[in-house]
Image (cartoon, rainbow, N blue to C red; front, side, top):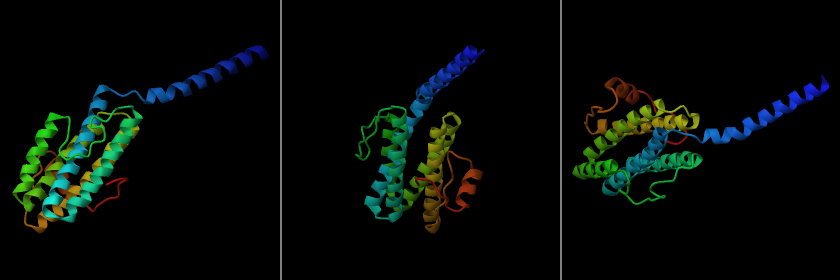
Length: 203
């Protein structure tokens, strides 16, 4: 009886040890879709940063610089999660404005810069467009993952994008400009702009 009990305890401890050793490796397993979304988000956040830096250099308005700085924090947050899953940065840490590997983002950057060049008012609409797009993309990204750290990352980025949208809305309203959302619903847009800025881990 004593021998059986000792054997049972030994097996339970061995199983527990095995579970603990397997847990970290299990956590590193993500789907191809999750991986691709992280890679795209990394470059998408840089696109926002680069456009806002360009707009600040052109018009010197602090709202662009402040939000560009926030986007830099977003990029670092994405890179941190990518590192957790051993995903290499496709841009190798590049901070060169307008440099991307995704052809969609290369074309989008060129189009947004062209619009920024048109006028300061158009730049506010560009900011609203970017945050509108990002909120929609991040909501889709959250729905496709079951990893808590990844969904928390996207939720935090979404929180920041909503604050950015509020800031650009204030600028647009002060200049008599109206923006109609292209990606999120009008009701969601109205809810965001009519609610106060919220605290995020990095926004």
